[in-house]
Image (cartoon, rainbow, N blue to C red; front, side, top):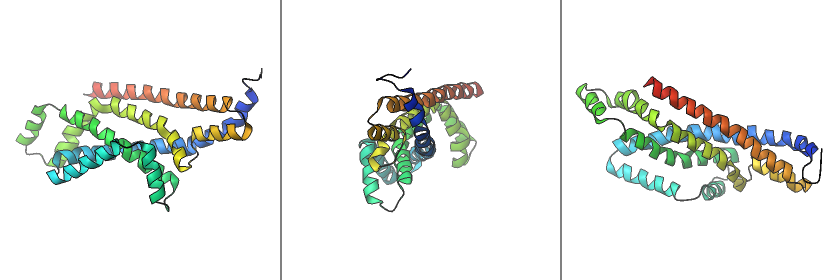
Length: 218
């Protein structure tokens, strides 16, 4: 039954708008941004191990710069500088780069955890550097980093409301827009929160299951 606090008909009225924003913006930025962050983070981690010191200094400075500035500032800055770039592209790249700096530290910890004997064995076998990293080191590092990487994916998902700063209509902005135009926020904001929960919880379960499979595979 509808009342002053909650009106069910508004739930069904706003639901299509929220789902459209979720699937077209929030989910796309999260998935593509996470993929970019995972790959770029691994590249950064490896560079900091194998590159000459001048390169590692520059990369470390860049990582610290990104990590020490709010993502909303990075979004607005990129939006003002790259005026000819689509807002969706800006959102994906900024989220990907921002979280890559955090994932790089996770990868670094995983690489450090690889037993010293594994490194010595690859040296004794005269294995090429590329094979050492991608056949020995990275697979072992991933087994211990999956939980942390997964947590960052979920964090990215929950940070997507910051896309409002570049006028990109993601899930929460769609809810706020509906609330502002109908002078009714309760149903829209609550429904947005429920959608976030329904998407985040299964993801956390999937990450836990993947972690167990990797440990078992070891």
